[in-house]
Amino acid sequence: MEIEEIRKIYKNLEQLVLILMLIALPIFGMIYLYYNSGNLDWGLPELPGFLNGILSGAGTALLLVQYLLFHRKLKESFKKEELLDKVKVYAKATKERFYILFISSLVATLGLLFYGNPYFIILFAGTLVFFSLAKPTPDRLGRLMKLKKEDRDLIHQASRPE
Image 1 (tube, rainbow, N blue to C red):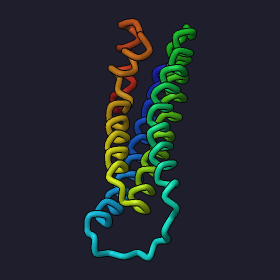
Image 2: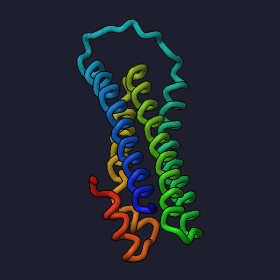
Image 3: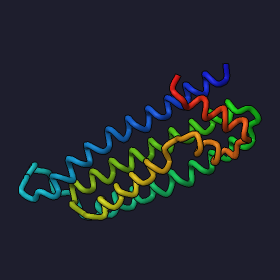
Image 4: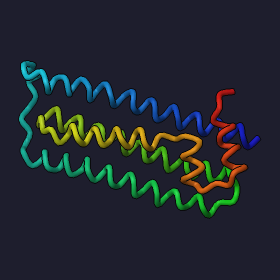
């Protein structure tokens, strides 16, 4: 049945997003507290200064790339006729997006750990904004995929717990 498959896809997406956030937040939180305490010394090696720029540039590029890549891949769903096919395209694009966001959060964490540069706090905050704004919801699925009312209703129905 189509609605059951959509429900399964939606549930898996929600779980992936939560798991990635639950991994990223505590790791960054611990490093942030370490950064702010000022009196802890983990004996970390001194890395070359140019890596600071590479990490900050890579983190910023990842935020931009995830946005552009997601919207480019989402256009593939407009070519599909069946709702299930559209949802599968959306799910694949969303998974890729959140993996990139997770990598961006790790870049920000490593940058803060090794360089103490406040820019990495801003980068992580930007990553969190995308984590929360891009989280799959029935309304977001309907709007982004430009679904008809009856398809939107099916998505809403599939997103409800059984």
